[in-house]
Image (tube, rainbow, N blue to C red; front, top):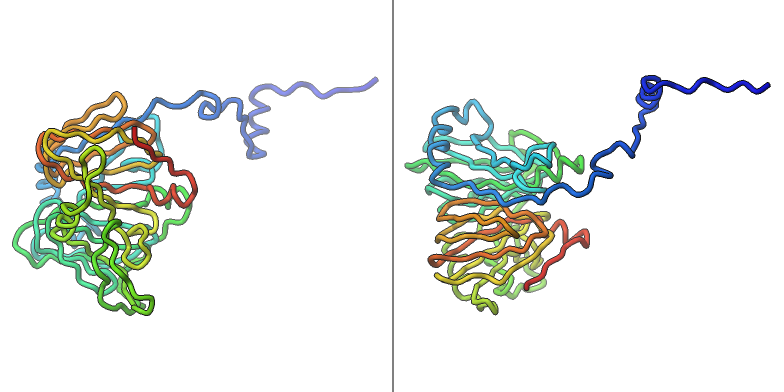
Length: 336
């Protein structure tokens, strides 16, 4: 007679799975529960943020905290995990008061600073001092040393955007505090560059990375850009040496819309953090509509049809993960 072992109880079965470090996929709601509800755009209105920024400026000193930053938090309850602003992107308001400095450090993550309010500070990137005025874009590529110093008269606020959540997911996030050491040699910056205004670069010329894109030059280049079929002007910040994205995994563009006009519907697999440099209007993302004004910030999820409408002449600054998806052959883009 053949003896058979007794059927395990549910408790015994789960204890055995736990001991063997396995789990039943058929019980995983993410695997078999269907797609989560679509994400929605999120707005951080400048008028609502200003009192929070002013309060934060008095709450802590840069002598106590490494950076005085208010992070922009993603509000989708169906996307738990490491805090982020929109998939792959982390954004926040960084605040620096006159006479303050933020200690030097470097990390594997790429980061950019877009000045929202105030002037007079500067960011030092691998030893190069980059002045900060409203609308300026300052880049700190991965593993560049950077610190902030403010000898000016008024507090300054800028938008930080990093690919930190992507690095955290990939397990490649790393950080090193100062003091600064092993700073690479640099030569004068190359000419300011945009996708449709690339400079002629001699093959023998030596250029350092571009760390600062001043708004005055960006605005002039945008005004000179050709109009699209919908009447809008679009411009991409590019690396003057490669002609590619300004940062390894982050892409930056500008959009100008005349008063009373709207853009053609656009669909992309990339995610965006958008800053209203100037103007007033609204954005439609599938069935969601948000109204925005100058210095507001909003996020745009992927895979939705998006249209922007301007009540007055508007300029929008976009930071996206487009370059990541392009390199992975996962980028989809189309107009309708």
